[in-house]
Amino acid sequence: MKIRERILVFGGLALFFFAVTYAFWQEGEAKKIPTPVAKGPGENCVESREYMRENHMLLLNKWRHSSVRDGERIHVTPDGREFEKSLNTCFECHGSRGFCINCHTYAGAKPNCYGCHHEM
Amino acid sequence: MKKAVMPLIMVVLLAFVPYVAVQFAGLGFLFGVIIPYVAIVVFIGGFIYRVVDWARSPVPFRIPTTCGQEKSLDWIKPNRLESPSNFWEATGRVLSEVLFFRSLFRNTKAELHNGPKLAYGSSKWLWLAGLAFHWSMLVVVLRHYRFFIAKVPGFVQLLEDVDGFLDITLPALYVTDVILLAAVTFLVIRRFQDVKVRLISLPADYFPLFMILAIALVGVLMRYIVKVDVMSVKDLMVNLVHFNLALPEGIGALFYVHLFLVCVLAMYFPFSKLMHMGGIFMSPTRNLANNSREKRHVNPWNPDSKFRTYAEYEDEFREKMKKANLPVEKK
Image (cartoon, rainbow over all chains, first blue to last red):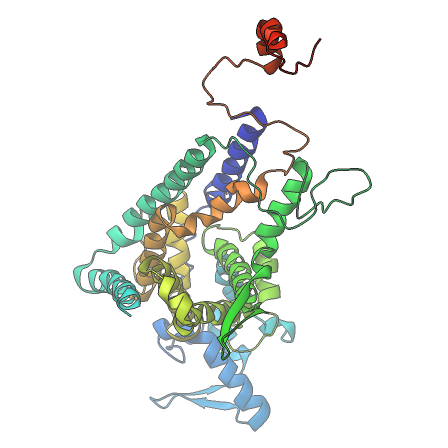
């Protein structure tokens, strides 16, 4: 191999190696998930913790549609408890926006709630 | 048909292995930690081995396939991209191939009509689907860095914002997800639909297609329909890249299917047609300048033989040739 070919081939391979192992060179530890801490009344959430962890955005989306478009502002759980459909209801136990942002920043998923809603 | 069914069965089986193993045998550590490490070592090692192997093979002569005017006399206009004459023009041709699949753009189709008449026509669908697939794939792969790096880098966030700009469905629909699935589906159908393509298609052609389709489907399923706990998935991946061998609890089995299929594809990669990723840069027909007229390329493994020129021959036999009335060059 000529020198120039050698530089090209091994330079390219080095680039490939760096691109594939890019994540290995980055700083930062795995964060333990901040466990949802319920302050306030201490009752259960609207749904189970497992459900909320994976599907809270669907529930909030449903709340938005039904309250804004149909004016139904009260959510009734299967076991009969009633909640006002509002972010404030969430914040009663879950504190503030900081509760959302921790995980959302870590997972790189942007919630679009706060485009309109203020932190309460 | 068997050529397509066997790879399909294999992909389905491969998808079931981690599902059963994690769900019922508790082999999460094997599929979440050990196999990914093996896969990345095989992938990188195999990839480098293949490329170095190619680079070591001698390419004594220029074998560019050109479709443009070679550089010759000053008043003849050369086609710099189609028939490059120096390093930079050749680089341009390789890049146009890598980034835009230039040679695929020339794809034609042949049809036999009554008469019999053979007709050729332009056929850009393969080029379009190929380009759409590869670019989407790149974006999808880059987007996945958000699971590997604790503090999501800016370019990944930017890609996500652009990719999800439609802002429909929840979580936001990625345009590349749709394009990738559509393009791969087209590439599969293309192999079935045309008899000529079907005839030359081998299991090794179907297998990677089905693998990619399965990986993408499981990924889409996890994002939009059957949710998995993203936080523990990210914990696992960040742990892996920091060589911290801890397996977080409670990751859905579907995730292991996705991960295992990716691992299998990565290990299969260096030994299959997928190596065109490295091979495209190593293609002599693309990366060699077409300069045979201006530069002599000597085969490096020619034996060191002694040649005798005509001038030397004539020097030795000039007098005898003159006597025999043979023409000589030097009097």
